[in-house]
Amino acid sequence: MYRFLLSRQWVILTLVALLLIPTMIRLGFWQMHRYEERTARNDLVAEALGAKPVPVESLTAPGKRITTHERYRTVTAKGRFDTDHEVVVRRRTNAQDKIGYHVLTPFVLDDGKVLLVNRGWIPADGPSQTEFPEVPAPPRGEITVTGRMMPDETTAASGIKDLEGLPDRQIMLINSEQEAARLDARVLGGYIVLTEPEPKGSTPEAIGKPGNEDAALNFAYAIQWWLFSAAVPVGWWILVRREKRDRESAGDVETAEAEPAPV
Image 1 (cartoon, rainbow, N blue to C red):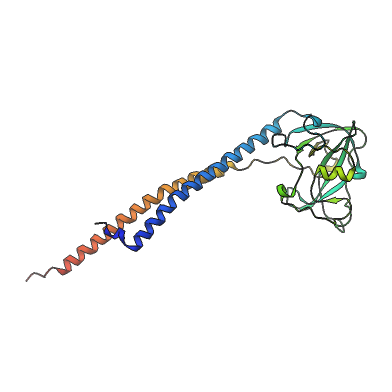
Image 2 (cartoon, rainbow, N blue to C red):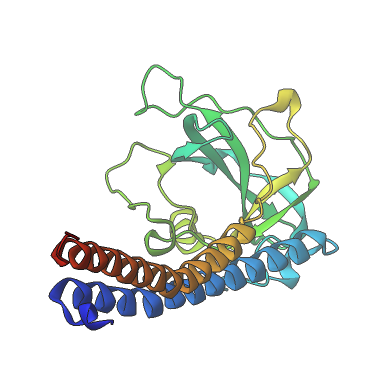
């Protein structure tokens, strides 16, 4: 009755179905793993952003690496901006994906250590990208700044190449070790994204808070792959029953044609 399953066509179809089932199950587990990773990252970001501000030197020090749990923590620092050693970070985009610069200004603390402060984004609309752009000045004198703690940027983590031979006072990556060598100063590890005080005239443009990753999408994909894996044997069985029915119908027709006509 089911001898047709031994035909080449049906053997191949059955093998493909047997391969698809574990593959789809594995893809479902992979998507669930991605869901758990993204959910964990979202929880870490929310926890960091919701934590109370702390003095910057309670989280970092010269040469220290900022950890995942310290990233996005709100910190405060008291000192003054050093605009004489200010640089801009090339090829940065704003919320509208316009290309420009991030303004990186050293902030000298009362004890002489230096905190790198990313003051925000400015457009690259000058006559030439080889010249230092016009940068709005920060507040003068001794002030208190507040910002989100960020780890040093590296090519491996960001995918941004650290190009050499750039114009004066332009850099590709925000890296405290490189800036410590350039400034010949004790620079705190990592840097902060400035949130307060807000700039006059809304420039430099503030860098927005990190958004949540769409973990729910990965969860939906996992369920989808598992449903597909369950549908494969059901679809295979439906095709088998249809083939059997078609063969039986064809057999009935042949039998009827082979019977002698009544005299």
